[in-house]
Image (tube, rainbow over all chains, first blue to last red; front, side, top):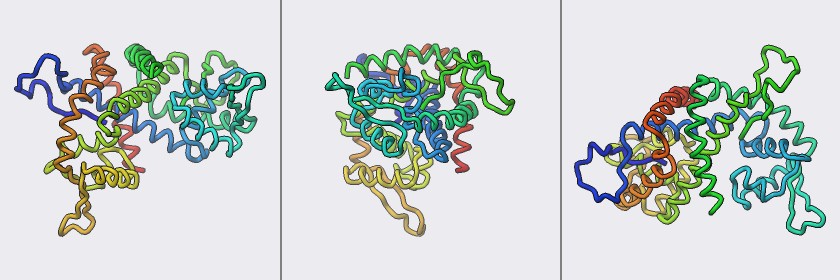
Length: 171
Length: 171
């Protein structure tokens, strides 16, 4: 995932006005840094979850369910919260059910209401793993920024997240 | 992928000094914004590449090879450049070979040297798709930052990328 490296200034060809200019060197380096950090951080955090036999998406499900009322959530809401497709989430929940971390249950009186529950074992797993995961997140990401950088990045990214969530909601 | 929401300030339990504190609210919101943008942006860019029958990883391979001398690269170097495992890259290159975009070739005189070449069709595909992809990257990411934000984020992320690349290289 990347774009061409040609800077607008390096490209003397006249372009029609409706064409989008290539990224400038300044834009390019920021774009590449974002891609690299996103990819490498996911790799590193996944790697450090391996001793716990958890994939990074499993850990995310445990966190979301542990924060939900009664440790349960409708499958459709869980898909929205974790930004996954329903079919992909369904496969993942099946794997986690086999590992004893969650339980799928129908809600009586709600024909379409299929819920994912956190099991006692899932809750214990989350509590055991969380300190290690926080340590990883701090060591490889959060503690590498000044408080000013944390705020500046948050303020820059929050509207982008809103924009992208809006697009996702419509699709 | 997330961390517990408990703020240090909300947790009166004394903790041993060696324990890592939970993320503060300020750290938490930045961490969540980063995760959301990384995930949603990949989803959106993938979606906008679909009409071109390209996965986002395919596009990345096309870009990297088109920037390489003679439009070819040793498989091991391509794995490093795209931050993929060799086995995963090998599967991807097989798919792209079947689609006519790349060609795998042995290098005479170099027994271990297996190269991936960009084909003429791969090069044409890259050139046809690039303007649309740049448009997507600008619309959903780059054009949503001020020049000052672009620089501030780059300066914050570049050392983190270096750190993570170093860890990856050792693994």
